[in-house]
Length: 209
Image (cartoon, rainbow, N blue to C red; front, side, top):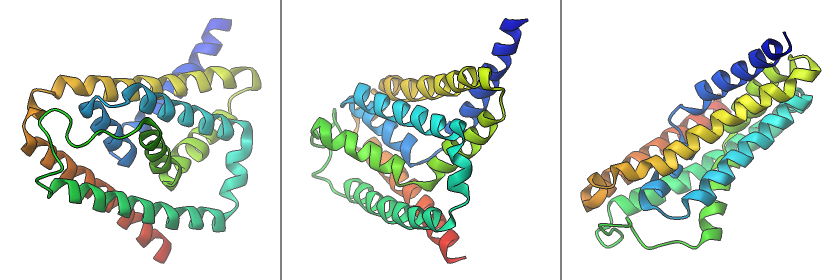
């Protein structure tokens, strides 16, 4: 009986987390690109997973409801997120159309670990969709679980984040034969740029509405 009670919140957290995290977004695009470059993949995956779990824990603890009652905070975060994503979009477009910024094995010059992790965190933290998914949506469902089962729910949602980012980052190398050609990097950076630009546009229009 006890096992059944703990399994249900775990499965709920796992499936809810998976359904939200698998949507194509700036964070996923960045992890995929680092995985293809084989550059600081473990650090990027770890940073994204730990951040997700931390934000989910904040939401499950009940603080998600507090943030939901502060529209000015959400609006400010939305504007900041739109600006940052627009900048990263321009950077991706610049890489896509720069014949000197690509190589057949790395897709450009290597970046230091700190810069890559900082970029991963900034893409995540300055995107309001991350807060909506982890703190508000996952948090609101988790907060409804009985006190003794919230940990199981959080474990399930955290596992979905770990499986997804690890698979995306380390599984990307299976596509290495395709990305041995510089033109493939051009297409990837173009898609990354379009994805980030689209999200930035959506954030900007939501503020103006």
